Image (cartoon, rainbow, N blue to C red; front, side, top):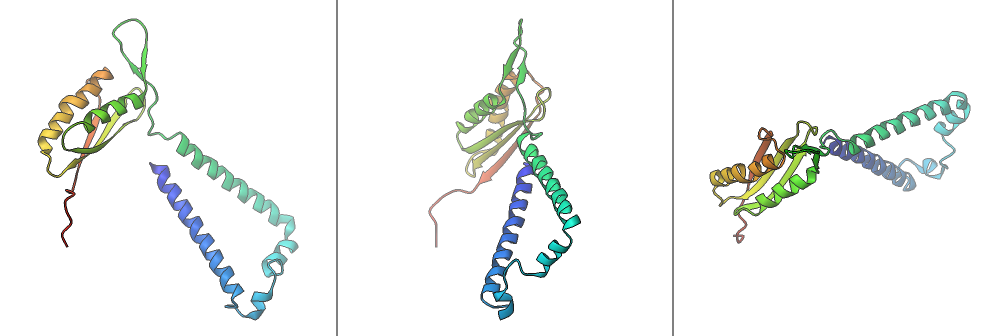
Length: 190
C-alpha cells in the first residue's frame, strides 16, 4: 500500500532526527564542544534570544507551520483509512427479485481457503481491489519448488478462480494471478 511506504519513511526520518538530537545532547554533556557549551542552560542561547526579540512575528509563523503539519498528518491518516485499493460491498445478481450483496472478504477468504488446500501450495493471498462495479481479483500464490507449476496453475484457474467468477456472477471478472516458487526446506549441509 502506498501509505505504508510513506509511514516507514516518515518514521525513519523522525527516528534519525531523535537519534541526532540525542547524540548532540550527549556530546554536549561530555564536553565535546568545550566546557563553556556544556555549562550553558538550554534557555540561554542565541536561538532563545532571537525568539524573545522577534516574538511579534515568530510565534504566528510557528502556529501556521504547526497548522500545515497537522493538516498534512490528517491527509496522511485519511489516505490510510480510505485507501483506493479497498472494495466495498459487491452487488450480486441473484437471478430473481431483490438485491444481494456480498462482502469482499467473504470472497477472498473462500478463494484463499480453496487454493491453500491444493497440494504443493505453501500459502496464498487474495485481494479484491478497485470499485464495487468493476473489481479486480488479485491472487498471489506461493508454491513449493517440487510442485508441477503448469498443473497447479491450471487447477487454480479452472477451479478456484472459476468459483470466484461464479459466486460474483461475473464471468469476465479480471483476475491477476502471481505464482511464486519457494525453495525447498531440506536438511542444511555445511
